[in-house]
Image (cartoon, rainbow, N blue to C red; front, side):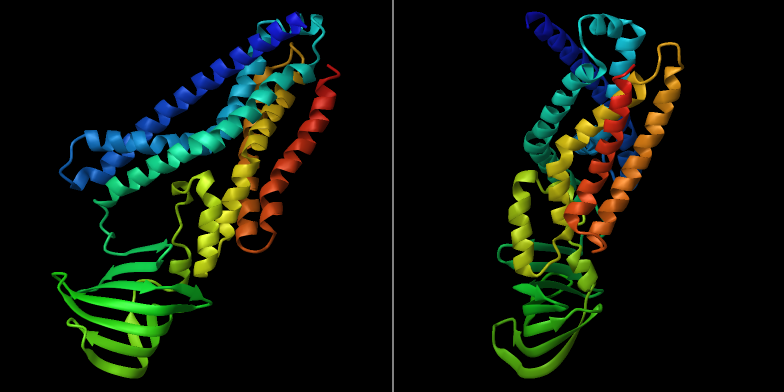
Length: 363
């Protein structure tokens, strides 16, 4: 029992060190690439190098989170190749461990790492991305056009050539905004008038408002019982329904509440529900990457060219990531149920890995 514990502790430390080294390497790579990208973005602004560095520090952890399954796969390949090339695997097998027993330690660690990433790291990265967007948003040229969903309703800010508008609605029903209020300002943000409407057809950029009342800046009624009123907007139903284009700003713990809020406001929640399912399956995704790395390395003989299996494993991982994204896209477009579209790639990987592990355990 003590001998088994010592071996397990040794393998766990070795695997965690490799993951830490691999993560640090990817962090440096992503940081350099992102700093270059941010410098290119700020080339027309009078800012120092500290702004791109700060933004990269805020943004890179999210990239690491998204790429962590790939990092675990490469770490698993490195780990298994290292114990093979150092002949440690022979000593482990002489101690009574099979290939499956050797894979079990990093597999358990992968599950725990997945749980920690979802419950702890993800909320931190979501806060960092919000801060990143807040800082960078001040320099964006298209920030005159904003839209958001809150517990108090849907808010839209937009600007035309000579006027500014702030629009509020209680919710969306099909292609209609319900209980619409449009606040109109001049170019210097002086309030001009308020337009109230029971609904607005936003199927196109040219909105059609129904049952309209118009008030001046003093609140006096200028006109009422207007059956139809036109408003040119930067948003139609498709743009408004995709307000949450960056779901990285929403933490795992907030997803359920955000889904409920979006449903109340009449928004499609398929992308959010897909993200929730991806979060739930994340620990198993990491586990599948460890199993896959073990299949492609432990199944080979010591005399065989291990790098051939590494190359095959990397190509396979790329195909898995494409298949994973393709399956998720089918779920978002109603081709498949959300749960099936997210879980199906993981199930396929497990089936493939199980067959490979049975073969590897016979080596």
